[in-house]
Length: 181
Image (cartoon, rainbow, N blue to C red; front, side):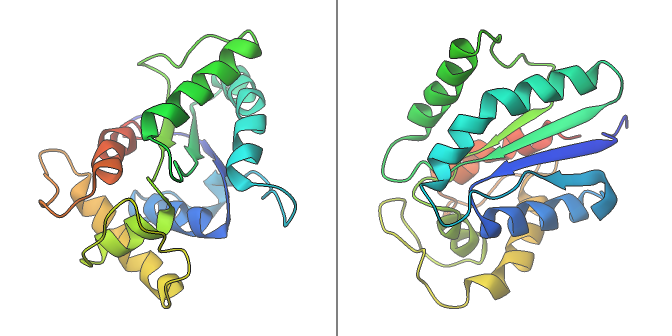
């Protein structure tokens, strides 16, 4: 396997970062190979911050790919909209910056939970969830991140199939995660 020598993560918040970090550990990546873009802080909206910094992150990714195998993970919630809407917004951000769309051979991974990352964490923990309810204030989320990431690793293995209770945005993320391999 030709592994990335650097994985850059552009994420909305610390829970996204924690989930991705644990997923990458399961894939065998060490902390020194993972670089997290700074979080947006308390000002403004996390998803807006990711969208505003996305094109620059893609440009930097493509420049570095000329020298070394690199991956870019973009974690942005769909919130109350659709996952496809976020994908269009990311595509529009690239077009506005006069950059080409993501190609099939690029290791740019889109992780887009519908509603929020907490929906995925609870779903991966076996809790019944839907993608309309806001689970961001549920108690015990932090303790569930590591086991949820381990379950995501299992579900994203080649030839694995997620269980029926898997929500659609999480199901869509599985082939995205496979882009890292």
